Image (cartoon, rainbow, N blue to C red; front, side):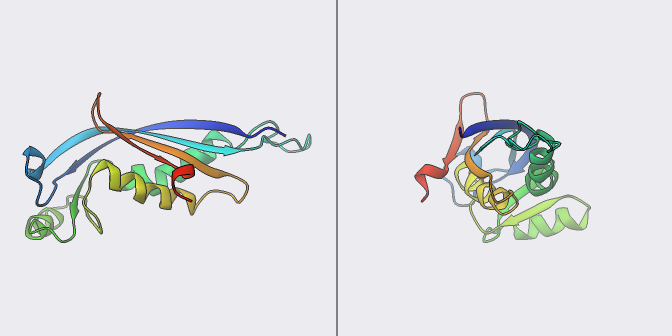
Length: 150
């Protein structure tokens, strides 16, 4: 039986600031992120199964990624929880803004690590996360591959 990779793409808008960074990105700013989620598995061969021929229903994959990533990060502002921006984060939260205080510096690199854990925890047993690609601009992106992280 063949292993097949399938990919679903997502878009979301997120603001962040990089605490302690020595360039412009130390300031609060935002990105129109593009996230590509690739999973790997074997297509269902049970002819009586409603999902015959699918590795995973794209709708099921979409539900997982929307619930774990997109719905939480879209139109949110992400700060490193150790930032002095905590006062700003509290002010924004008090005014009804969606703020995430992450356990990490909110770079694309760290975000894909975080996303990989969140998605992996929700995938069915027979489906594995193969890779993630998080694009923050037209020319800049971070990738996570399961094969690099055994």
